[in-house]
Amino acid sequence: MFRLRLIALMDRRSFLSWVGVGWIASCLPVAIAACSNTSTSGNAPQASAPRSSPRADGFQAVGTVATLDQSGQLLVKDFVGGSVLVVRDPANPNAIAAVSPTCTHQGCIVEWKTDQKAFVCPCHAAKFATNGQVLESPASRPLQTFTAKVEGDSILVKA
Ligand code: FES
Image 1: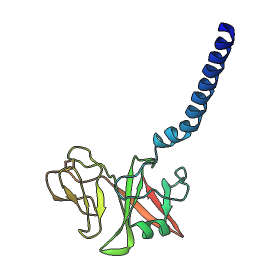
Image 2: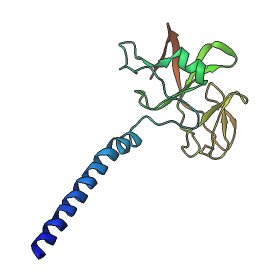
Image 3: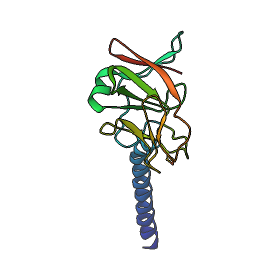
């Protein structure tokens, strides 16, 4: 009798072990995806097109015009020069503005606010123009800027 109970107990333990392994295996891909390097800030979407390595002229494709026009801004974290935030210049819709999204005050990630035509920091409300210049404190130094252009449907930024 004791032996039968022991076998039943072991089977239950084995069953629970396999259930535990199955649960971990099913959760692992979700955990890996949550820890990946392609997260967004605010409503700034990632570029949908696969990004490439920099070309010989230093430009790197960071997304498509269609994606930029659909979302209003592109935040790319795997840009060769660090993170880059790309928007259309409201003063010249044919021009592209690309800045480092890292606020020069204390390092928060700025977001493009179309209604304000400015990059706005969510931490202490500093504002920056598309050329990176400070519009409102507490930041005192401009955002780093990058040369950007459109080629076909691709948006290219030079580090
Ligand atoms: S970190 Fe951006 S305003 Fe303070």
